[in-house]
Figure 1 (spheres, helix red, strand yellow):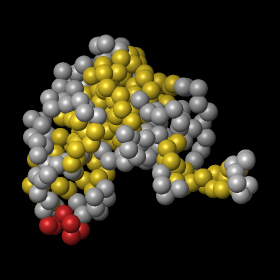
Figure 2: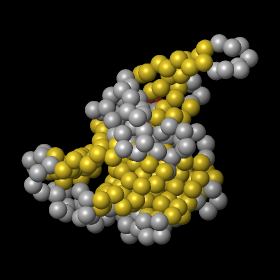
Figure 3: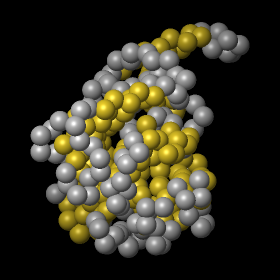
Figure 4: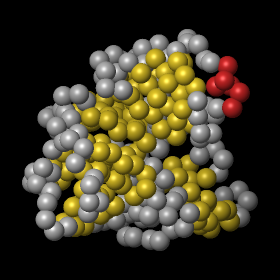
Length: 273
């Protein structure tokens, strides 16, 4: 991968004006024609721009890719920590969710930033794919009255490096084909952006408790054993999830600090810490 020498900075404007947003921004808007004719507050939840949202080693371990809430993607040398490449996306809102992943060969990086999926070729240092994987709106509304900037919650390459799975804050699931330059699967379902992994051989997206069957386009619950310690002190909201190399185990992290190891085929919990 030709990432040596001086730092390379790439800036990309996708027709969105930048606006500085704090950790919790209150925006007052007037709903014209509403029954009460009163103003309401729109709570936009986001993070400071320097918040690190995701980071991964390259397959050869020589570099680390990382992505920040302000829309910046960086590649750094894992030994010297020198910044080799900086890729900047202009956003209207700082993010709470963004994901990246190296291709199996390490020659490409897929990054989900805001509404879009970007594929960066590290040989040519060019964006080879940019596609909207999120909702049309920049903000997603939740039942507690808050709005969250659209972002990518889950992102995963297929094992052959030909397609990419994404899941967004707006609960839009998709598979984008690099080779065919089109979506192989698109579905918006529910309003519960819990991170998932792609069991591509079984054609399901799984979070360990339930899975989305791509052929039936519906969620199915695992009829599996839940360890008692999970109910004692773990939350059912997962902040992260990963799949091991042979796709037999899932590891989940919860917002209460638990780590849960789950059988990927049937959802049986093995360990809760």
